[in-house]
Length: 585
Image (cartoon, rainbow, N blue to C red; front, side, top):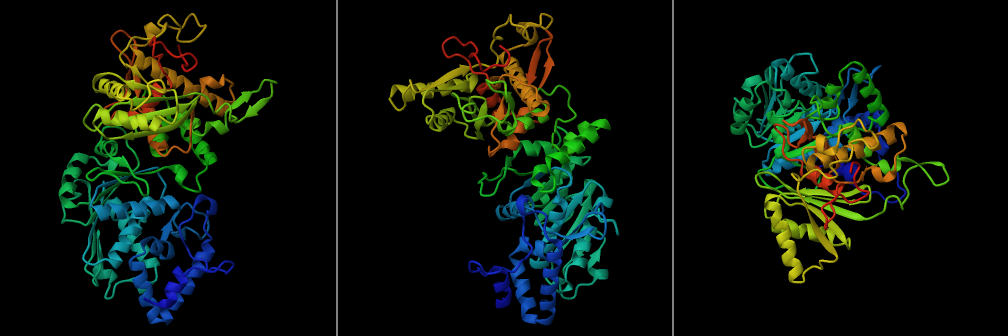
């Protein structure tokens, strides 16, 4: 490899020494890129490659093992909405896009299936195209597959919305020095196929029901796969075609193959270990894009709502699978208003002065926790811990042994002396208390410092003669509105989120203890918001509200259940609701 190139790209620089600028993935703070600087850098390097054969050979060897750098340095992306001459821009990645590339690299390394759940307009198809171009250029004898629901989406000459036209345009716009020797546009860039005559690699496309019917592929991209007409047929074919299928799509409702795979999969983040055989899920949210601000979101949402298309907005932008479903208990916008709400909550101090943001005293308070116990199959355990009104911790895991799960919960909670852990006591959950009793009887833990409290979702409604709306004699009694404790507790959680939403968005003042805050640093915050928004409610045969936690095609929202129980604790002695922690008593 050219020593000059290595020095240019990789050499560490002394403190105070001017470092040559080069394109590289940028975080939110440093966005947008200096596109003029990128072009200037490219021209300089292109001229060196053309004048120095050793530099060119070194560049090719360098980029063979530096995929992200190759994309940032030499590929372009296209946005027809851009005014002026900058419709084509250097493809400088933002951080989540770079992580998407590492995600797929790990899928290939481990021969696993991947799913990318994305908000619209995040450049993920362009990322997959850039990944394919690099693989086609620098790897020998690989076959790359591309599929979409319609043929014109896979390949339509002159239309950059089609996948193969994106590929051809990227190849045409990069320096020809990177093209394979002997490459001919006429012979090697035909309809839905690209051939590399130098190394034998190909990119081939298929559409509709024919997806996966061609020869075996090293990797197969399924673009917008949640929108295929016959997803089961495609899934069966893909299973025999490749070890690395990668589904890329915005969401499209509940129960389809894409949604079922997403539910059965596990969210990926850099450095996380996921057990073999489980679909790995990369979530790309609109907040991951440096140019998409809260102002952008609010303006766009208001426009779609005014046009009567809010349900589409929820699916396309919020990634809300149940966006078009009625009777969601907690709308996702209420949940998102509670994320980091400690900085936004309005309140009145003892002197009558309006204040913004909670102080340390208000964010403190007693610790409480709740454990939802896995009951078999793909179900998972979950633990939620709150401090006062703040959800401080929430996680799920897949161990099926309730005794082992109980010991994990004890280990995670013993740092909070006196904490009480509500636990799902029905069915396998009864084993949790048995393990706790064993550990206290043999002296492993101190029963006075830690307590498990049984919580039964099917139990009778608490405070049955209280009104649903306090001081409103026209509102129904709790016993007439709720079918069981689970419905009552989920409704209480709904009221917390509603009040927090009204406070944050409209400035409506409520007692702070009636609100809820989701710590914005929670590692699984996107999964948490999805699970909290999943349950629906409907009347049963007695016209009392029941909760459907897992509408058709979904899995149980274990973290959502744990959060619900944590914010609706029961007295360990009486089984009654603990004063001050319920929004409806």
